[in-house]
Amino acid sequence: METKLASKSAEVIISPDRPFVIIGERINPTRRKALLESLAAGDFSIALQDARNQVAAGAHVLDVNAGVPNADEPKLLGDLTRAIVQSVDVPLCFDSANPAALEAALSAYEGKALINSTTGEEKMLGVVLPLAAKHRAAVIGVISDENGIPATPQARLAVARKIVQRAADFGIPAEDIVIDCLALTVGADAQAGRVTLDTMQLVRRELGLNLSLGASNVSFGLPERKAINAAYLALGIARGLTAAITDPTVPELRTTILACDLLTGHDEYAMRWIKSYRAAQKARRAALFLGIEHVGLYQHKANAAEIAAWYEKMFGFKRSELDVSYFLAGPGAGRIEVMKQPNDAHCHIAVRCSDFDKAVAELESRGVKFKTPVIEPKRKLVYLQQPDPDGNLVHLMWVPD
Image (tube, rainbow, N blue to C red; front, side, top):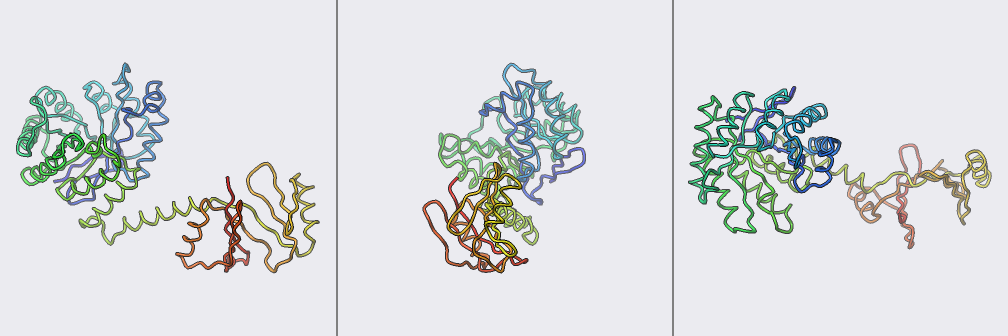
């Protein structure tokens, strides 16, 4: 079964035969003071940055919540929707219990959205399903009803079945219903996680529906939440979970989802896994290697003192003399070192690193060999044995901030 969502020009398909769908959760002011205050002031800059960051981290859909106390939620959610679609091109999931706010967002949206959510309560079904039918939106069905949250998987299945049947009364096909089997915190009930997992398996087997989950709820109130959430996602995927409302910027969650896609046959030739690995490696290297600390010049046609004096006079750089060199520095970043001893090379490049030992280990893992390091209390440096392609010497350098 395929649940199709769309932005103005992009489509996302939720299906057990497709890669897992991440619904980014961060555009939600609950327990986020800075976002709450900015939305209340009509400032969407934080929300838009969240949108861009989540898409860059792998979100396929964005959950959008504008629940600001005492605000005009219909206007706010409608305006926020228009701003987000100008910033990113992914389908949106509108998260509100206010029917007028949902109407405003759906009316402002060009594409097929996801509504978050309805329960099995008749009152909610009678409000949310007509909106979904009118705007051709898909709906997350949360399996609770007038009696609360059912205690057993079989009772939760009955609520899911009711939601599908009532949706059909409004002309909404089963593929446009995504069931949330309700993750409750295991800190309050040790069996809560197991009941939800068993419900996923049962709903998937009996109804064939796509399943979503608020993945962070299971760990509420506990330490090391990222590890718990990642493990729970993996267990859910094994039982038929096809989408989750979660934070894609958390590496542990993103990596777990990619690994599950790989192991369930949804990543041909491991291309997405390898791409993600390479991107992570690049990010780690960027964090280790901070840029050019200085460029060192070797004398050829003039002596070191003359070269240093020229830079001092020409640019007003401050000159300081050491035993083996002169350093010249201006008010900005980066320095010039003029070596007193000649060398066949024209210059050396000092690459500053944030962690000397990790930087050396990273390059050694790629086959780079080094000369003898110089280790001092306020300076560490080591030259690479091999120069750069133009014959310039290169050394790593660590100095305290």
